[in-house]
Image (cartoon, one colour):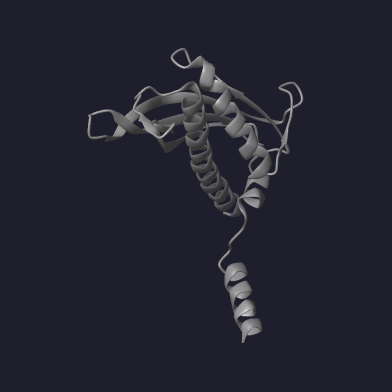
Length: 180
């Protein structure tokens, strides 16, 4: 019974045209990719979090090789479109206990064929700012640098995932045009 289900599943997946994202990326992105992030004037210290998330995504999700600018065949230049922190919850004294980081990134991407596209991705990350310190609650509503960095990095990962989805759609549209 299991064997029959496995065979039906394989036929369904193959028959529906499913391809992993890395395979779709083969048709639109070159093997070597240069990644850069435009330094934000409002938030320069956390630009590194975005660059780390994008680089990680290029290697792990798209299976591309990072390369210096001079030898890269494709490039992705990310820039922050918007970054905000919104209070989500308050404690009984009116102190903020959790925030949501909302991040939108523009990805300027040079494709394998030499064309350049601008695609956007957005992400968010919820996090708490109160901590339990020696059996009492620290109700400081201030966002620490570490919390801010982690929130931006997690939101960047989500934004990159959205970018990958948009890039995949672009690749499939290009393949359809090439077929006709």
